Length: 196
Image 1 (tube, rainbow, N blue to C red):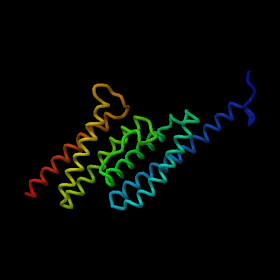
Image 2 (cartoon, rainbow, N blue to C red):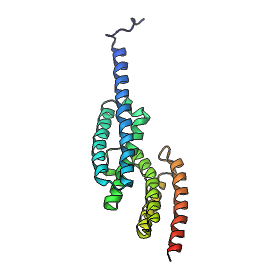
Image 3 (tube, one colour):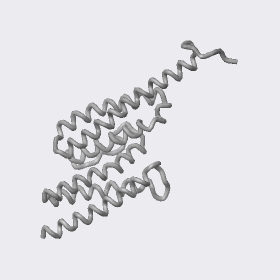
Image 4 (cartoon, rainbow, N blue to C red):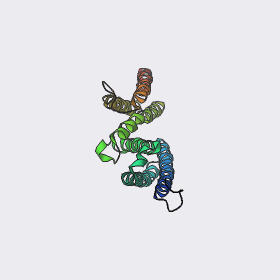
């Protein structure tokens, strides 16, 4: 029979170390998610430089999460790891769309393939918000270009759902994105008709 656990017990020490690491990743991941949300909000308000600085900080946090998960694979089970990286992809992709008119490829990131795809799925919602803002400002040409990126992003991620479900959680996001596309297409079409 094993002796009673004490501070010198290697098994107890291992569990305590894992617990400490999990708490650290939860804090870093939570801060990452929060700062990605702030960066996206800044981008919507046209405060590009502030968002850029924030995303630079977030990139370091994502690097730390990746490093810790590489050293301690058990951390990959934490939902906050996937969520933080998805939010990071969404924020960075939105930043690049606004500043360069493009969405960076998967190879630009140090994330898992499913984190990239799910981040793109969330990007569609940010593009919709941008499209509606542009319609409201009467900038229909830019709104149309943004809508085109929504469609392109949707068509890209759709390939990972049909005919096989390659990415867990993608189906629900695709259903939401399809509705966003349909609604945005209608609003944009009406705006073009009224502008004639």
